[in-house]
Length: 348
Image 1 (cartoon, rainbow, N blue to C red):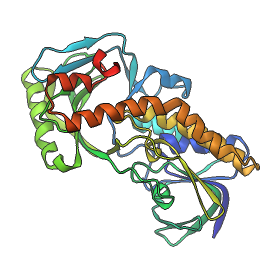
Image 2 (cartoon, rainbow, N blue to C red):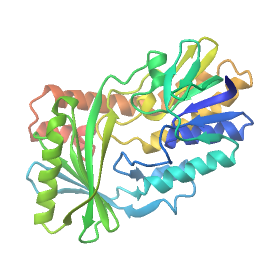
Image 3 (tube, rainbow, N blue to C red):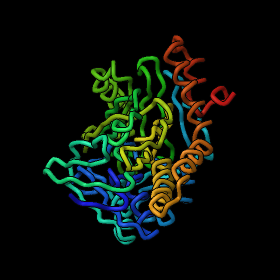
Image 4 (spheres, rainbow, N blue to C red):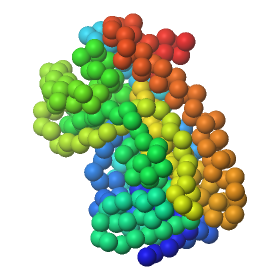
């Protein structure tokens, strides 16, 4: 049995940010991840809004190129360009590694190759190697199918399944391209440029997961015909994205406080699937709240929940309404416009 003040499950952006924040405040922190190394495999499109600079000051080594605009392709129409849409395309391996390094420098013990078998009702975390840990606070930053979230009854019930390929980019491009179509049920397709390569992918409701390969292949073939990307597939990834909105981000297991952050807390936007910035921000807040709780602050968890509500609830609820409208309305062009952030109808 190993005991610690704060136990962080997951060392993605949310978990690494939480471990760093708690470590800086003098807590004994252990952080676990089943991956072999930080950031691999990459399971996202790697775009972040420019405002992430508020939470991550030094981005230079992680940025592969800046983004200036968003181009939205509605069915077969010409693209609608939304200028002044600033952001960055990241190298998630470098980005995640830097966050883990920061956590380590703050005193957190970050351990990879650590597979969690069970989080018990008493607050014990059992690993597949037979090791058991307990903590005064558990931060669940272990993704959309969080074991910590499941243990306290806060589960992401709605997910989107994604598939993404990496291909060569034939010409410079500084916009994120979004492809909306009735033929992509419950999601959309994308091309996100990353200097000399591009991430090309799509997300759909799980019931249509079998169609993902064809959807991505058709988009890839179209982009090849247009001379925008190369034929060779350089990489393949995919995964689940939570799209059911914000969960209650706190609970207890015996005497152990549990806080959820990032995807585990349902903070990913249900329309766009964006979640990196929210993961870093909520992780930092969770780490601060965990440290405060360890120090005896009895309202730290409640304050954490209230801060997440203030920052994210309105935007997530709007996105949930738009998503559910698309799922219950015949997806014509008007419905697709109302369901996407680039159009004024979305915000009305």
